Length: 272
Image (cartoon, rainbow, N blue to C red; front, top):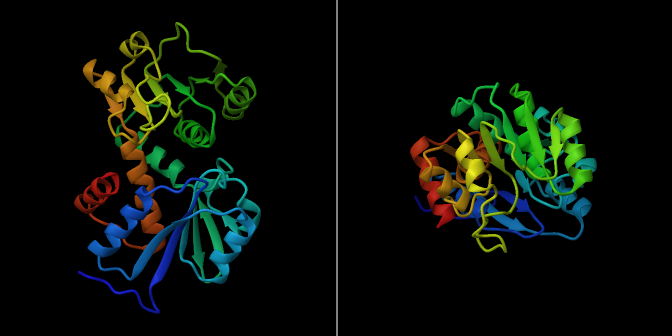
């Protein structure tokens, strides 16, 4: 159905240092598909306090938050959901008549994917990365009962802090370590980046693993995922993560949960 913007149209938005198109395309596709009187627009800002104040003052229904604002927005919010409290990081703000409640749907998406793929909690893992998304993944692993893991990070301060906070071990390099599950939470393999054609883990390390999880969403088939598929490994892709976290945002904003087919079409449209 065609929709016309009017005085009752509800605005949802995103705040990011470098705005992208995935969320805008995903949400607007589903608003159109489900004939919802919403519209979604991406923004950036140099003043996070004023931006969050604008969300409150203008009645903006929902706001996705990306780097570098995931932590800096917290002092200006009213309440953190458990998903945001778990990692002290926000990626979603919901405005209920001026009351701003924050969530982290990255954390929610990772937790759901671990359950959907039925990854046993006794699985050993090595996770490469130490940034905000790595924190979401590590917190979800800990809360799902994964006890034996290593954080691989060249930055010793960040790597050791992440590992010690969540009860894992830190290594600067993976070396000869072998584990059941490899997880990449770095830009290695990301389209358009300097490391777009590189593997986050060596082929021999991938060969020794059973499961490979790449959080990089674009492209959906990263070099790591392609190599893992060629070696017959179970894979979890960043395309699954980005679609699921955007879906959970959509549900929080609208109260509507689309069908699996609608979600798949929206994700494909957003990546197009």
